[in-house]
Amino acid sequence: MTKAPEAPRVATWRAFLAAHTTLVEAIERELGQAGLPPLGWYDVLFALEQAPKRRLRMAELSRAVILSRSNLTRLVDRLEAAGLLRREAVPGDRRGAYAVLAAEGAKLRRRMWPVYARCIHERFARHIDAAEAKTLCDVFERLLAALPEARRNSK
Image 1 (cartoon, rainbow, N blue to C red):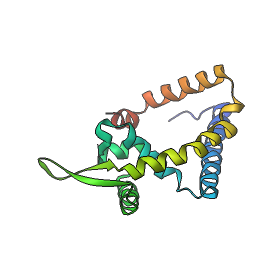
Image 2: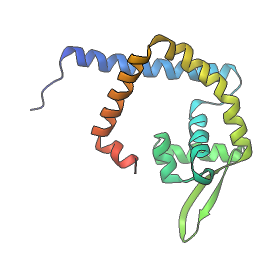
Image 3: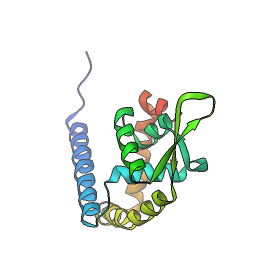
Image 4: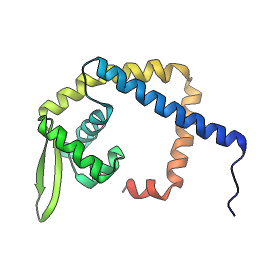
């Protein structure tokens, strides 16, 4: 039988979930108020901007933005329809496709960043000091390293 975590760890888990959900909702709201698309769009555009040749295979992009394959396909469809990225065939793989960042996608990502950066600062970063930030980062990286799913997704 698996041992239940102690109350402080359960409380920490619940606080983490509540903070994450509340922060993402606030960022989404501020992006919307600025006339910008949702945070998921930023994540895809950023992942492509950081990738070699500004392109990733769909499976790589799915791991980079932590979306299910079907959710990513729908999001990529919307980004492609908006002219922010395009799909390219993978040579030698008839079923494979790259998502490639378009110039308009890079421009939109740059327009979104100031709003996103302000939200990160105002709603998160200014509430923790440098030592706390390092501790949180160390803890989250250790948690990710311990998860088999994360190891698969980082390949």
